[in-house]
Length: 113
Image 1 (cartoon, rainbow, N blue to C red):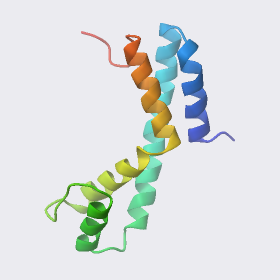
Image 2 (cartoon, rainbow, N blue to C red; image 1 turned 45 degrees about the horizontal axis):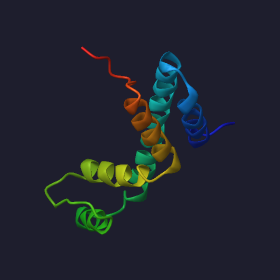
Image 3 (tube, one colour; image 1 turned 120 degrees about the vertical axis):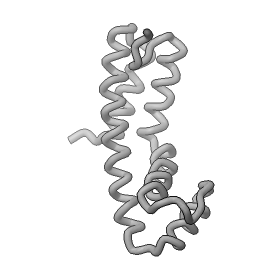
Image 4 (cartoon, one colour; image 1 turned 180 degrees about the vertical axis):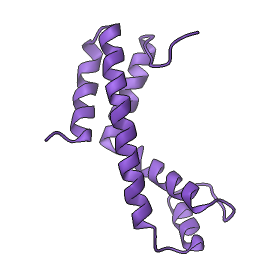
């Protein structure tokens, strides 16, 4: 069974030679996988920090280099921690590079108006 990361890396590898219509299809699949991967990691991070007090959660976020304060709720802090971690994964990095390359080629998932 292929993992999300493996599939995203495969899609990113195929993207440079894909033509516009095919590239949109690759981006669409990659975007869905990116969202699935992030949702899974967000759940993992929420479970990891579930036992921490609010103050300890803020401290963990500050230690991760996030700008935050005690006024932010737990869900927001967990989301920020997960996003920080997710953006450094091979899957997220591959998707970001793929999307940036496609944008340089004038291709994106959001239709022009």
